[in-house]
Amino acid sequence: MTADHQQADAAAGTNQAARGVRRRTLFKTAGAAGVTAALTAGGFGAGRLSAAQDIDEKLSLIGSDIVDFYGARQAGVGTSPQAHACFIGLNLKPDTDAKGLTRMLQLLTDDAARLSTGTPPLADPEPELALRPARLTVTFGFGRKVMDLLNPQLTPEWLKPLPKYGIDKLQKRYTGGDLLLQICADDPLTVAHARRMLLKDSRYYTTMAWIQHGFRNARGSYPEKTTMRNLFGQVDGSANPDRGSENFDYLVYGEGELGHIPAGMDAEKGGHLKPWFPNATSLVLRRIEMNLDTWDELDRPAREMSVGRTLDTGAPITGGGEFDEPDFEKINPHGFPAIPDISHMRRSRSDNPDEQIFRRAYNYEDVPDAVWEGEADEDTAVSNAGLLFASYQADVEKQYMPIQQRLADLDHLNIWTTPIGSAVFVIPPGADEGEYVGQKLVEHT
Ligand code: HEM
Image 1 (cartoon, rainbow, N blue to C red):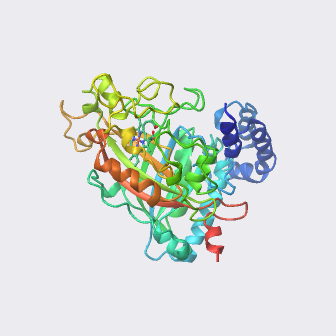
Image 2: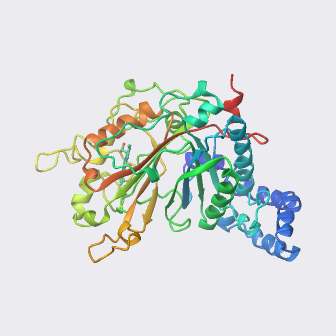
Image 3: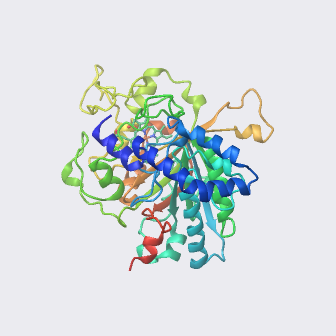
């Protein structure tokens, strides 16, 4: 494990020793006041509670792992990605004013903080489902309407829908939204319970715009820090800034400056990012359909050329290991660039080092539409799959948009991929204990 990774894990609150202390504290303090009350209210006796406690002694269980909810930055961005994610887009009801919004944010913050420590929220009808946080994080994102109610002066210029790109086939059921709840955990039941509790407490103020579920490998299938694979079988996320590194702070939060400059980039062109608010960032969520049936028709070398990386290790096709820099100057025996100019890696990399993003994507796999419509036959695609492409950056306009424009203009992967959903949110700073998420924006003068 590198120093960066250790730092990132410590920041994410997954440090073993700290976790042990927190769990013990939780069951001594919240155990009496919160868990017991909730279990008793739910009709369960002390016997069941001590069984839960016994299980809890086995700290090796990943269900017991806690990520701190409170802190300068919201959890769920720099947190080592959990196995399961649910992204929820909500729209404010027309009569939800600033007061109602604040009330809801208070409620949801309280719910999220409790759930993240394995404590049932108030009035939880199924408190047993809350006892395994499994590194649960709930990350709040705000759209323009929410920002306008909280503190319009802070609203960044780029907080609006992305321009319409030629490759887009956006569907309303995956697009827009005033408020985002990003729920991630290593246990799908934890995600489901958190989703239900948060939606119950938001329904008076909002309506659901969309809900999208995603997954990665189950925790423990691969060593921690293994880069994820998408459903094309590609290693996806290798060129990401390292969580906890100087580059991460600069590119995701606009703080400090770049340390490492990747191959083909010119340090002189960068250095223009600033935080839109301290410890705040942004999320662009794109739902991108991946056509597995036509992808299946490609042979392995063609698949590797489409990105410029090998399928087995994710290393650049010009040689080295996964994290070695590609050699964009290398010419193949036929006299062409070894990494094709139209490859996804070549097209997504700019010479401006500010044009980098932090990707924390999840796979999705749904029922093919023809099945829902009762029209499935032997020609029906067996898959309806893709990526919930979640990109975090300090500035959507300076970082995300130029990359997306280049890819929309030309990217070999476009043959097999289609964006069908799109949403942009600011991710406000975290809350300190006793505060609600968004309070720092409201109180800023
Ligand atoms: C389904 C759609 C997509 C797939 C399957 C995909 C897949 C990949 C893969 C396999 C890599 C190489 C390994 C890595 O560094 O992660 C990569 C790199 C990258 N992708 Fe994508 N990607 C998709 C969409 C996008 C979109 C929409 C963007 C941004 C608008 C994007 C931006 C990038 C960037 C910036 C890199 C790193 C390039 C570098 O500097 O080496 N990708 N992608």
